[in-house]
Image 1 (cartoon, rainbow, N blue to C red):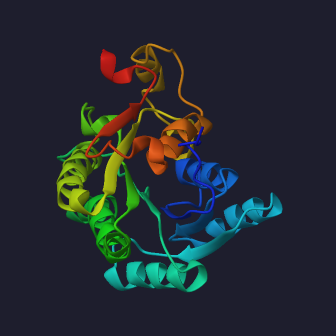
Image 2 (cartoon, one colour):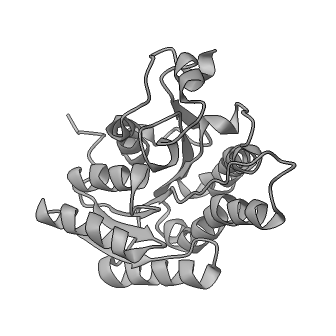
Length: 249
């Protein structure tokens, strides 16, 4: 029987791959036999992830990218095509957050979050689109958040972008369905990592997670492999929440 979860030999770009969930997803794809482009604004961090992947026998290159800049994004795509000749999977993971009450948030902070979390998803998808459309196949996976459906104080900019990414996922799924391209999203809950290490309300958040704990980054591996594989060929426009039950309450 054909293994419909087999993604070996594919080529994937992962933005925000220098740390956190992006690094974990880059490792998961590489472990599955995918050639990975680790893209990060801080290229030294992407270099470290690529070194780790290469030591395990994987194929990887690191690329510096500012996802909010169209020229930088196009350079990332060009370098990928120069190295590997194609692109099969795009993981739009790069994201930032400024935790401030809306009345205290500066215009610069708001614009910064919008530029990376939302405009970045658009620019990267637009740049990769011609390659996927020409091939008439491909996978786009946008990383949103439970904050795209829920709300907490100080998440005004972040939650707005993540909700917008969920809607953008649906629109792009409609536009690219005729080309056999699946566009889906993963909505992580609270995971152990850089963005959640100093939460002042960690106790209250844990009390809101039915499983009683934050997730381990490796617990996203199943979702990323599934949405990258033939197993999800008839799934598009969806958001898969991996949240320990957070949105059930």
